[in-house]
View 1 (tube, rainbow, N blue to C red):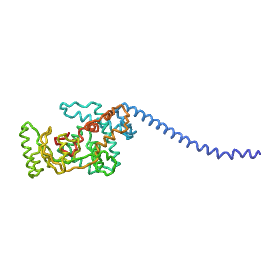
View 2 (view 1 turned 30 degrees about the vertical axis):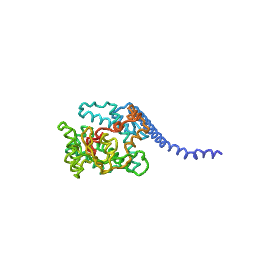
View 3 (view 1 turned 90 degrees about the horizontal axis):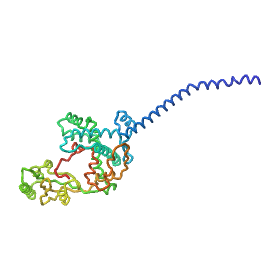
Length: 373
């Protein structure tokens, strides 16, 4: 018994040695865990500080960096986040844009109006990106190249374009392409895909479109209305007698369509002034209106080239905005608040969707015709 007792410490010694050897590893694990807890608590604290700063619309470097790191949204539309950093960036750019424009008696938009324009466009863009996925619509490199070239054609050279963009928007050319041109091109492509899709989705937004051409004899101080009407009637008679419409449009037209045979392209109802629209949608393809049409711009000779039924993407998009679940997560005005309380003119809806008045100016393929409503 005494011998067994003497052996017991010897048998326990290996076990005690293992316990001692484990202690450094345990200390290391505890240290690492403590560091992770501190880091986690720091991140949690930074996150809530950032959320509060975003809610109060702080634009400090810390807030913007943290908001970008944590992907903090300023708003959501149908659960889709609108990044606070995107909102601040676009709002600053819009403010600079308006500050550099000639006023010509036009009042500068208020801070809330600028915020509405920036936020509404970002929210619409999120919807468009989401729908583009459904329609397998993507922007190819060539699409961007073509749109960029169309914009560049308005400037003497690329350096001038870069300088003007920097002065007007505060952005480099590459940033302008990503934030303005790319979303516009995507919307244009999606609109086309939606309009020509054969599925039944969105069929309730079908509408008639007309492709027409015209020759405009524009009112001016230099010519009496009676004299102008007599000149327009003489040209109309020549067309009735078989002379070429496009050639006479090039010779007598007084708007930019004269360079394209008077072709106005495709348009839907509501896009032209009523006097012009009513005639254009009453004619059959190939039919020449037998009488001159007077609008506020002058006298028109009108001929319809073709007609078609398409699904109206703008009407569809309006309905999606109307029914969208919108969450405002900062101290900013909801740009769509009250917009759909009563039936609104199409123009008001479009203004709420536009980020800036420069979208069409920069890459619009349609020249001004003097008849758009």
